[in-house]
Length: 136
Image 1 (spheres, one colour):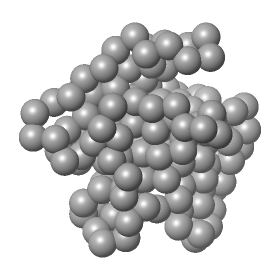
Image 2 (spheres, helix red, strand yellow):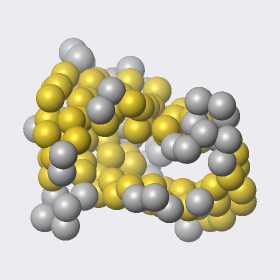
Image 3 (cartoon, rainbow, N blue to C red):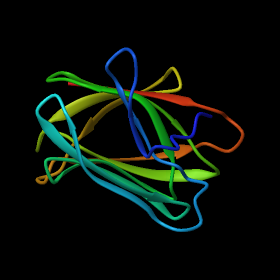
């Protein structure tokens, strides 16, 4: 469970890591520039929210830490850690079907709504980092 003490971090492989679910007070970082985009994060025990160019990429209730997030036209992939059950919402393409895999278990196809959001519930209690792969 690697907490991101800098709130947002670029990993050596070019992926992004963010979030610290252990914070009692809200941690916030805005205007983080990377690859021509502007990112922001708000994170603490009750929630973690991550945006790119003011558009939702990831949100969790309660807060989580996300490591090695990679996103392209076809896939969103990351490792998530936290305490207990987490409700995770990711921003993707609207009205689109995706294959969802959590911790090596294929959950089948799920569709985004009109705003492009896809919601997942993941039990993180005592599991360390859980791998999430969402493919178009």
